[in-house]
Amino acid sequence: MVYHSPTIEAAADEVVLCSTECPRAHGQTFESPSCERFRMSCCKRHGVQHFVKEPMPSLMACMSACGIVPACQSVDHQLSTGLCYFGKHSGEPSINVAGWSSAYSVGCAGACKKDGGVVGVLRGAG
Image (cartoon, rainbow, N blue to C red; front, side, top):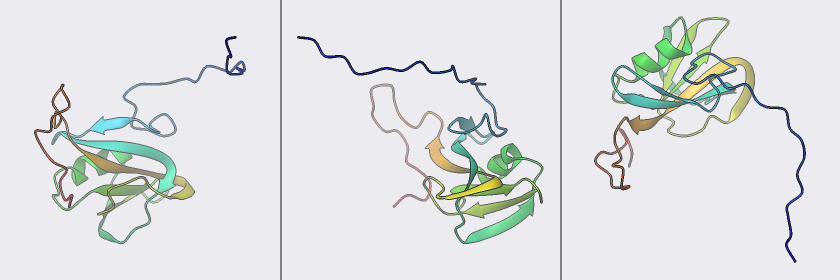
């Protein structure tokens, strides 16, 4: 006898690849000009102690600036104020809040070989 998992009809999600604007950026990865890669989240923020607070026009600008600062591991961007907060949190943001977008570093582009071997390490890890 063969058992099948129950299924339901689901509406197709509209996915826009390479978006850096919420809500379409949620869960996507952005590669900054410095080759640092960031995983983006919408309506979330890290809320950790920040070490830089600067006006930035977008989440993309925020991530690009963070990518060239060695201590920066995460960003929170507040849409209403245009402020970008640099932090050292190297994981998913945990605070759900409208009007914010965030991202955290997942390492440098090309850091892993195709066979799974590591050729680089995360900045600030350890």
